[in-house]
Length: 187
Image (tube, rainbow, N blue to C red; front, side, top):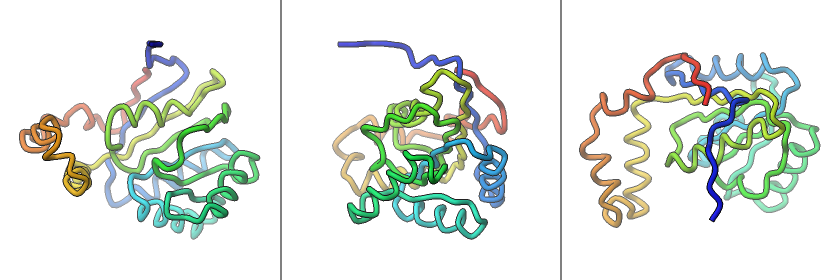
């Protein structure tokens, strides 16, 4: 067994409210980064397609990646992003294992990931070269409801009592760690 800390001084984590202006903020965030390489993570395939379309409307060159795309489309998206032809990829957890691109300068989660493990694993792709990288999470309290529906559909609520406890006992105040709007947290 190999154990190590998730502490990486080169990563900065930020949380912002996902309100009605989040798409404008996302677009500005990506444009501010110019030619930097980034990943925009979504929980659902539907969100991947929506975010990808919105970015294209605003002339941000990006590719998308999710499990329902054909292998040819996924491979083409991956190659364009890996080669640097395209600097932004919009993806869900289907885009994960085997990514070895050290120059990812920013990472955006559109919604709360399904677990802290998934969050750490995903944002860990940023700044692998040791240079500064930024990780931004857009959060809304409605994410809790979305995750409940997802976990319930997958049967996780009934199979794992911890999930049932978290979703039935959680009050808004129990999620306060994510409500520090627009603050910077180095990890």
